[in-house]
Image 1: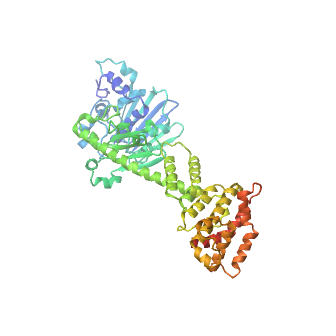
Image 2 (image 1 turned 45 degrees about the vertical axis):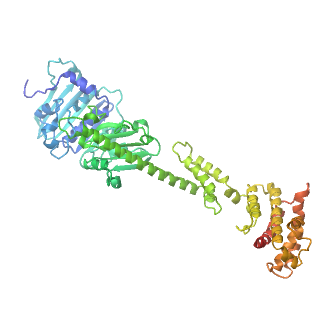
Image 3 (image 1 turned 180 degrees about the horizontal axis):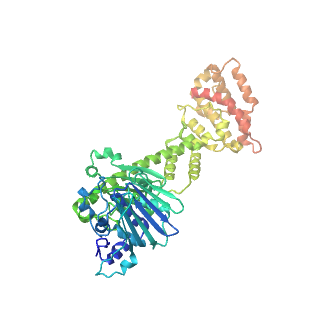
Length: 586
């Protein structure tokens, strides 16, 4: 072996088992190269895909590698590079993400030929590896990559370029999809400190910068965001589990969507030193994570303490899971993260309930029918409860109905209330707006007024209600006048308005309707409730001229004739002020 040769320092079969066997997807393999560039203190990485030629080129401006370093670091499989660096940090002070020394094997999961070129301190070294040659190398022999350059003098800046050729993938991930996949596997991207550009042969460009990671995690139609520890100042005052997490430098965010996420997007990922340590999972922090909250939530937590041990490794090689049961510290850490999730669930439910309440209030306020009923002075608690109950059900997550459909249903419920019927019935057209029955008037008259409202449930065809409204008006006149006469009978005798034969309530009830009404008008005149000496006579004449008694009697007895709506309207206009005066003496 000469000093300028390259050696893959591992049994050739290991490439098959540790590389091809573990990494079958393009994002996973390329993510390894990106994090290698980070560990090399690069500030810029260019990843170019030629979809036509099926070739990928990844170049960085990191520290580069000498010939010896290519052999000892890059080509030596399973070397823990952290053990050779002070505090496992790079010269720029970055925490090293690599540890197992297996990442470079990922490339053979996606391609057959790899060319590596690295420049350091004005010297260029490069070699090529062929997967088929590696497979055909005897187990007892070393595989020697093909040397291309050995310490060639160059003016190029430090950095490393890797060409991945003869891709074995049937389909190469689209540039936009690749950006999203790479973005969520690493969260140290930065326009000023670590910018990664993705390009293709057509000139398309995608940029991975400081916004890339969270944009890849945040769901469409974002509902709430819970950031730890920023949003938990109150809970941190007394919650020991949360205090422990903060003291360990753990941070992250949980994002929820208005509607359930697809199963592929549910759950939480764990990163360590900025690199994905465990793919997202609902049961990341608890094997019992089956609450419906988990179908709405996704997010991440950066947990560097998982990867602080320089020798022992608690992250699975394929970065699919954390080995939480490895020791007591990790188990306690997972328990504390589970407690944090419980706190987030409670905050989510409270926030969601508050949002639903606001949406419900907004929906009711924007619905003219519901808004009218709820703000009516006559609305009853039962009517309010009925509308609110329906509104709450319509805002439930399980209710699959359009906004327009919800609006129609709320309108229909509001229109069924007595308050709405009262405001949108023939009663409103028929009875003068100034007419009301005082609350201290006896129950019978109160009931008559309510029945008038309830009986006139529509305004489209007023003549539909002639019989009910006419009979109720007649009953209102009869009852009011009878009560006034009975309560003031002695006074009426003294005034000569009624004779002695009318001396008992029964005799009052038996009086003709005309006599009751006219005697009550005379009583009002004597009580100075009518203006002018001839006012009572004029009033009685006007009542006679519009045929109040005759037409109301027709309702009772004449099968061929009865008053129409305009007739009832005239009666009410004339009689409402008289009834209002009589209420004073009921």
